[in-house]
Length: 273
Image (cartoon, one colour):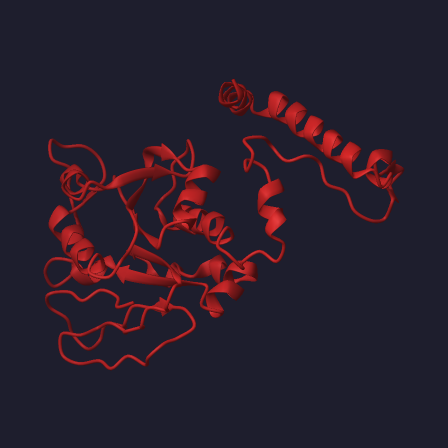
């Protein structure tokens, strides 16, 4: 995946980064500050537009997602928004129209970055915003079934509304709280999505039995030793009766969901009825 190329560049700027199994060493030419990484055949593609490309892959480069990244099951590329900025200092923001605190990401700057990225980026265009639809397991499953996703990491007071409307961008939120930027949210959403890709989890059943996969919270888990600090593993789990174990786990999931997430429980009842 090619990263971002601004209208005017100099040789002092570092190239942006692509992550995946294959790579080609970047050659810095006049007006070219990006590395070129060929898209892996059939790999799920994640493209991130951000002011902080060095934040990636971050934790996504570790554990199962990192292993899958190295194996080419998915590929991660970043577009450095700063390289599309205006003027000598590559400004990307300006004061809010109508007054107010903070700064807003400029539509012309973001538009250039989006246009460049969309030349090769598959999947939906998503803006990570606290006012967006809340991300959930169902959305992760939907994204995992697509060729990939392109994410815009917000900063400051947000993104000019005209950009959102012009590109018909979906706004998605990690939860009912505010972060300083979208990079952490992007990593969390990508982790939830990538682990659902074929071959990423060692045991495919793990993804089926997890919290939220069936609309309920997951049942309690236990492992050896059989007794710890005077607390024993429930007898039913040691019985070997898998049918009874399944019933117990289902009852536990329903009880926990009712107690801790009444909103999920109500939705579960509506879906059943």
